[in-house]
Amino acid sequence: MRQTIYLFILFTGLLLGSCKKFLDKKDNPSYSGVETVSDAQQLLDDVVSVNISPLLTYGECSSDNCYLTQAAYDGLSYYIANTDTYTWGKHPFAAAGDETGDWGAAYAGVLIMNITLDELGKMKVSEADKKNLDNVRGSALAFRSWYFWQLATTFAKSYNEKTSDTDLGIPLRLTANFNLPSSRNTNKETYAKIIEDLEAALPLLPERPAFASRPSKRSVYGMLANVYLSMRQYDKAGLYADSSLLISHDLLDFNTLDATANTPISQYNKEISLYMGSYGRPFSPMYQTFVDTLLYDSYAEMI
Image (tube, rainbow, N blue to C red; front, side, top):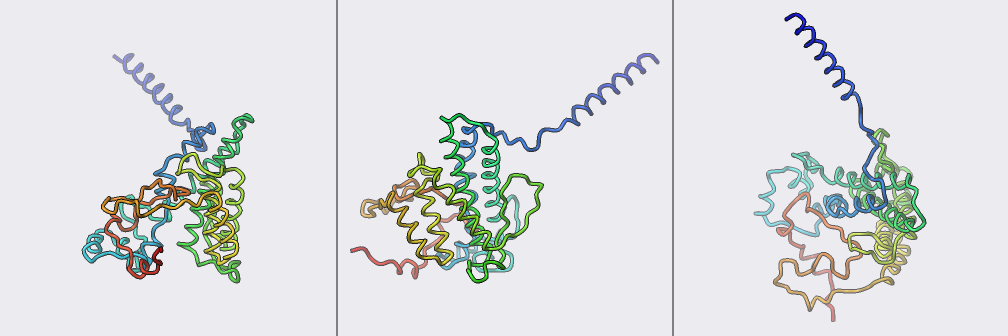
């Protein structure tokens, strides 16, 4: 009996020792799973994580471009951030459940782009695959710049050339290394990086995308036009808008649309230079939202 007990203790000790050695082995925390250009492209082709989730809506929801009926507004009361964003209340960013809000959602998109750019920088590819690598790299730069610009226009002061050196912008996360601390860059640094990366993306991208969810020269020109417009540099905004329209200036004929359809304008129509959507945070569903009559009336009738 005593011999059996000794054997049991010995076996248990060996088992615990081997378990400890197994548990002590840690996975490489820097491993992203992106090993090839194809892997990186698939990461960027996740439309929900890249084209929809990171899109900021707080600015639009708190603007006067749209309004809710009283019944729709009352239906938002379960989440204070919904109503306080709409009414400019005190708690527009209150956390609830797994809601990350615009800030977290946009930086989640930034992280995806940083992982992509970090891994592409390590890859050695053949000359035949270099064009595909450049395309993915250009796409990642374009998406990250778009997220940065949205964050800047939502959470930082409007760009002012005279005070941009001292006005605080946003943290520019340029690597997937989460051990690096974050600090807010100035507005001048923020916008300079946005423009720098968009300009770097241009020569890497085709004029038109293979799919509407991927960036192209056409959409990057359009992004640059928007950025310069928000900086009040109207000459440059006009030049980049023209560059985008020279590639394609197709317009929908509204006379051919079905006004009775739930979605008369398709999400991948010929006017779209880059498909970007939104879940409608912080108030949803968006079909309860109405365009303000003042905005609607500001458009001239086509003759």
